[in-house]
Amino acid sequence: MKKILFMVCMAGLFMSSCEKDPDMGKLDADLVVYTDHDNNTDFSSFHTYFLPDSILEANGVRASYWKDENAKMIISEVESQMNRRGYERITDPEQKDQADVGVQLSYVSQTTQVVTGGGGYWGDPFAGWWSTGFWGSWWNGWYYSYPVTYSYDTNTLILEMVDLTNKSDDGTQKKLPVVWYASASGFQYGNSRINMQLLLNGVDQAFDQSVYIHRIYTE
Image 1 (cartoon, rainbow, N blue to C red):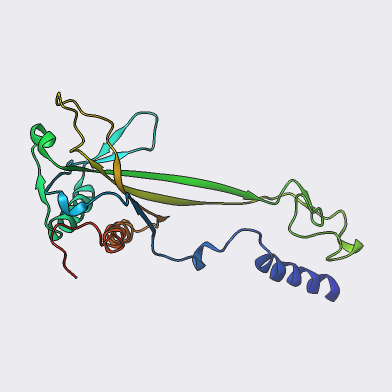
Image 2 (image 1 turned 180 degrees about the vertical axis):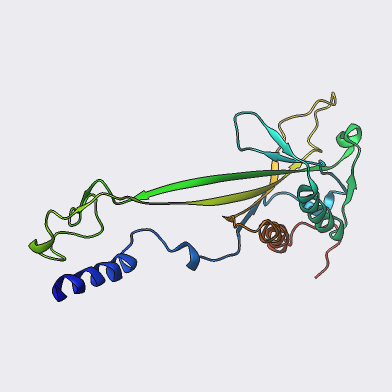
C-alpha cells in the first residue's frame, strides 16, 4: 500500500514537471512588439496623416469595425504619438486624399484550444506523458482516459502606415506602399482594463522603437 501511495504521489509530481506545453503563468505579461519600415522613406518629408475613427477587426470572413470607447482610446494614443512627432491629423474622410500618409489600425483576437494526453495508456510515448521505461513494467496497461485540455486567448494590434503621395499624373492612386509596419501581440487576460493597458503600452513601444518617424525630432 505504501508503495502504491508513493508511486501515485510521484506521478503527480512528475506530471507537473514533465508537461510538454509551456506554463502560461510564467510567460512575459507584456505584448511582443515588432516594427519594420522602408529604409528609402524620408518620414520627415510628410506633414499630414489620415487616421480613421475605427479599428478594422479581422476576426471573421467579413470585415467589421471596432468603434467603442476602448477603440477610441487606442486611436487617441496613436494620434498623440503622431502629433508629438510633428504631424497633423486630417479627420474629415472627404479630405483624406490630401493627407501625405494614412495610418490603418487592425485588431485580431483568437482562442487556441490545446488537448494533451488521453486516449492511451500511461507509458505510451505517443499518447501519454512519458515513455514506458520511466516507471518500468509495473505501470504497463494503466489506462489514462481523461485528456488534459485548456485554452488561451491571444490578441494582436497591427499598425500600418501607407504613403499617399504616390499618385500618377492623372490623379489616380497607384499601389499604396506600406512604409511602416508594427504589431503588438500577446495573451489576453480576464481583466479588460489590463488588456487595454497592454495594448496602449504596445502602441507606445511601437513608436519608441521607430525613432525615424518624425517631422520634428524630440528625444
